[in-house]
Amino acid sequence: MAKVPIVYKSTHRVKFSELDPYNHVSTGEYATYYADHRMEGLRDYVGWDLETLGTLPFMVWVRRMEIDFLRPARGDQEVTITSFVREFRGPDALIECAMVDSGGTNVSRCVMTVAHIDKETSRATDWPADVMALFFEKEAP
Image (tube, rainbow, N blue to C red; front, side):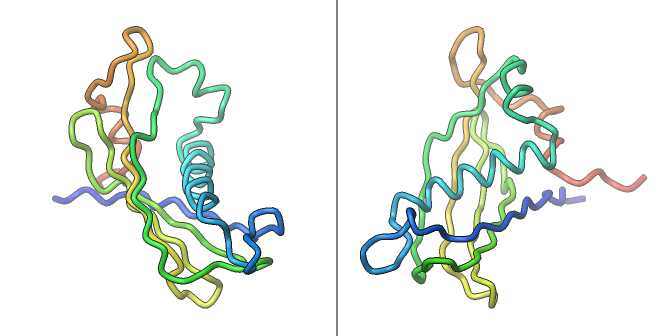
């Protein structure tokens, strides 16, 4: 039976300070939106707030983000971001993210690669099975 990923969801209202002179969200802000979305999701869905993250025996490290800009997001617009872990490959979690406007139109999408880093060695290590399980729905008995 295929594992069903847990989808994180958050909303964000575009602020004035996030805009370029053309009233579009600045390019670099997208990476911030996606990273903050995942960290808020870890807090809301897994219970890993910033304090808890500091106590874990590992760190999460964003290795890469590939962002597709589909339509501009504009000032005071509300956007919804969703994401889920598509798969684990050794130390890497591949996370698919999407941003839509209030009408459901795709604004942006992203694939984020997040590494599992052992705090003791500061080296990337495979994601433990019990931690991977936190990102998928529990199977029905």
